[in-house]
Image 1 (cartoon, chains in turn brown, blue):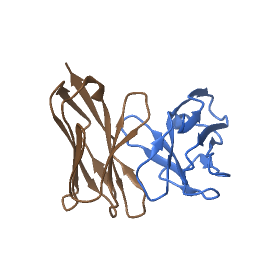
Image 2: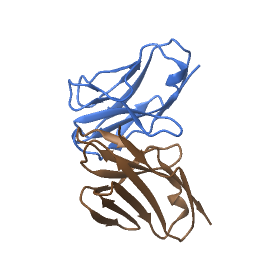
Image 3: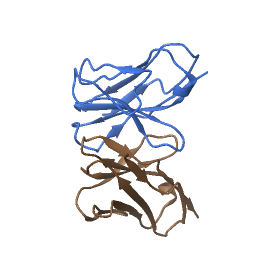
Length: 109
Length: 113
């Protein structure tokens, strides 16, 4: 079966750095996506990785290792507005998105 | 404002009733999707459409139907609602069916009693 694992909840301090991990086992791979979802709102696209390595976009970076079936989302200089759920998703060989259950990130002052 | 519009935003429904959730996009995207989101679970695909005139079943299609008469509209119908269909429903679109960059509507919170 297809499976995506990510921690259920994480807590971090404002101004700090946090790394949210995602491991996946899917039928094929056509890219890995990270989405941000604030409570009561819709998910919004954050990043896309299809090749191994690090993609940086401002305070957010996303890393992929296809051989290990592993990705992480790195958030720097945390702000209170970063409190949200972060969803990891993989596009499989049939171009279907397989979603993780999401990681709820709590930022404390 | 360009994007996806869902209606209603919230609805309480008696079991056995028929309900249609509406979804309209103005981005001229080819692909559209309906997901449900339940606490502790990832987004689950109900139905999708890669282009106007075609639809396909997702992971959890039972009890739901869709139509795609044109590019912009993708309504989701619950023929006879059951309490297990209580959920938040998200409509989404993408430029094509082979990308994972989706644009989501604001969601429709449905409670079936």
